Length: 334
Image (cartoon, rainbow, N blue to C red; front, side, top):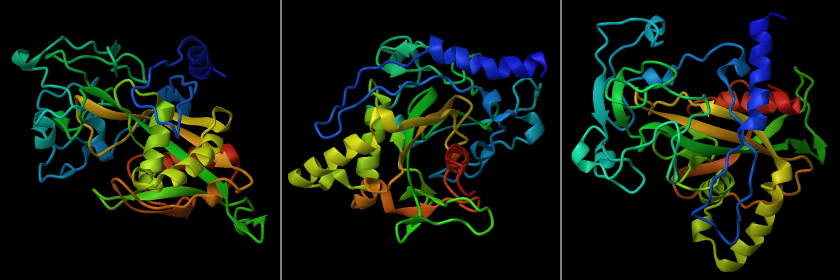
């Protein structure tokens, strides 16, 4: 084993001990109290080869007819000089309107209440990246660590730099007559996960969402899963109490296994704003906890159902990649 590969394997492990994420929840629910899930950075070398984002260069940009400046694979990396690069400047109107979840335009000094602290915890806004310190461009704005996208500014994303999400992957074994179903070709048991259909693009996805400023990651996972997969916002009181007990069992710290923490190849990404996520697997080995959940699409989900996991699934953003990691973790069919 050469020195580079040895360091690549050792570095994330060291960082796990040195860097543990701490935050204070601003949104705590009586039926899904947050827990602290230990989180450490996942470096690009975890996957063997660096990712070249593809969906982050796709056109037209989501929710618009805006086309990005074309970027070929060999021009993605910032280390490649490209004097002709002329990215499109686009920020969606919903972001320009200045909602609570969005940053102001930091290029307009008249709108600044304070100077942002990139690569740091900026008051209650986490501007740190799982990939480590990111560079700033000539305007002192964050530069996408994965390279060019053909677009500058923020598009549909609220924050300059990393926009943090949390994705709970809730799984169980597929069973018939109480026994695990074994795939005929692979000889391995089939894993199932709860998926929601996104209303905005009609693609199936993991039921996750954006981390609110100051919110614990565990609280985000429970909140988003409850709102999207169980329609928790419209549940009557007694039903919320019953669901709360199930949540405490399913989303317990002991049952949480980190799958991925890092960059997401998301079609909303730009040169100055990008998605990052923490994906965690919550597995019900016996199938007697999640199997009792009353799935009902809510919030921004159009539908929700259990899916068998295999390599043919076409999911939103990098979600298929996350599921492959879960399959490898559980030694299941792919």
